[in-house]
Image (cartoon, rainbow, N blue to C red; front, side, top):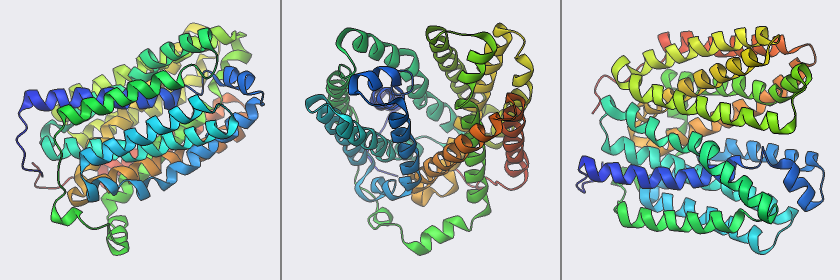
Length: 394
């Protein structure tokens, strides 16, 4: 815990500044999926080339623990600024030298920037906010995820429509640089404690991995993310085949998902600290499993199908965000490392879910719902009977 004073109003402004920076980063991260056809036409490459590139981005996600300890070693604000620097450099590079090679580089730099920035932010908040109030703060910081798809991605769409596929990169780099300046002005520099001065050792890694609570929390992350991704990769095809939706109409589902994510994050803000972290996660997993089981039954009506997708994404976001404040307190001596491990388990779940979802879809969408529901349900006994919160928390 750093020693500089941090009054609640000042911390509130710091949270706003960091969340804004994270929303800019998430906008660049999430803009590729809806605009893949525009990038494909602009670059003159098949869409499959770009989807392969994004799958490699997912594979890189499992290296997140390599980046996370930077915040433990260098300080939280320094790590956040390094992340923003990588982000701005990458976007500026593709703006100056547009091409498939530079686009690949920027995709990898954006995800690397997130690996540095996100654990640093979560650790910064965890050190300054009591555990009993941390669910609210974490949920508010996660508004950067839904805000990206509700605000940032539509603005990117306007830029692409007016200026072509390369139009968003320079504006995003400029806004990212301004966000970094805001962080410098509002968040004080923090020197790491002595225990953070050295890199985490292999023995410490193994010690963390031997903790049942740590492994169970990571398993919940992996299972939930995998279940969600198994739906991500096929729901568009399901809607198109069942209801003959146009590309524009399919694009509307992005807004539906964004609103669902926003409400899910709001639910964590309201319930996590009041109900308890483990109880909130368990509630989210139960609702999420039910949503997956029921979703395929909505194939007869587009309104019901959209409502099912809305509920599935709302409950997933609720469960996954509720897990973050718990993770920040499982090993307080290595918070950034713990958050980066969560990122890696999330990425591994995404990769496995994409493979499983595509395979199972051959036998009918109903099996995607069953597989996702079962995977999510496995997390319920883990959070109720394996994960244990620390007895003494701030």
